[in-house]
Amino acid sequence: MFSKSCEYGIKAILYIATQSIEGYRVKIGDIAENSGSPEAFTAKIMGTLARHNIVNSLKGPYGGFEIDIHRMKQIKISEIVYAIDGDSVYNGCALGLNECNALEPCPMHDKFVVVRNELKKMLETTTVYELATKLKSGKSILIR
Image (tube, rainbow, N blue to C red; front, top):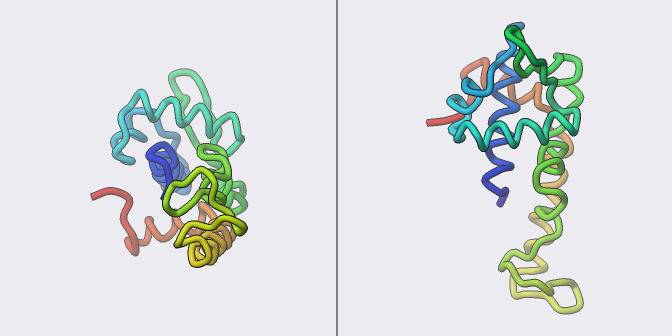
């Protein structure tokens, strides 16, 4: 459903959020290790997320990535998805056709429109803070 970049980006943000709640900044190597992403790929994704003001990036020996807890409560998962994948998850065809729409639908079009709308609603109403606190409480996991 999401690109690999987007999956890694969401995992990275959630890991950073769990650490930020505790008052820690995290280095790129820690993010990569705890999100299951290659380090160079993680660095590229983090650059994108920093440019979209989803995460703060601080340089230097005491630098790293962090998210202010107040900002964490405002950031919706949809912002991360949009920063990395754009709006393709809301517009793409379930079967990957180039020209799928209401006038020329693929066999799954009508049912997939419903799924996409529910997905969009869920992503637009779920905050980074909500998911980070779930992780912190042990009610969910980030990697296996």
